[in-house]
Length: 115
Image 1 (cartoon, rainbow, N blue to C red):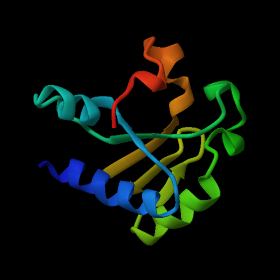
Image 2: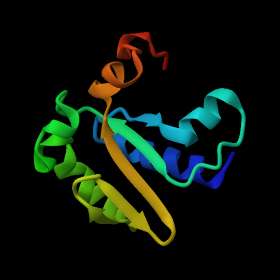
Image 3: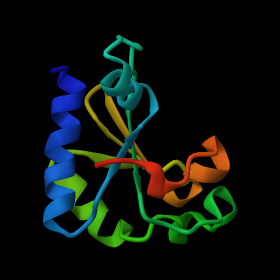
């Protein structure tokens, strides 16, 4: 298990305690599916949000941001970019996106994903 994946699991556990189910995306997610090293530079986590995605105002795009931000701060992260919903701790970057945009982006409906 990579350090980044272990960090995702720690964050996912905290999100789950708040009733938020995260979806691991990006290179780190691809590494878990393909068992190949894709040199993930950050952790992309998608949660429920406004289906308009980037067209929604930054402050409204991620639905539980009022819960996520304090939780991330308790884990030692700080919000560095509201538009990207990016948090940083030392050299690790976590970005939150909207899972409802998955189908428009990839053609894969959320219902087709397995847990």
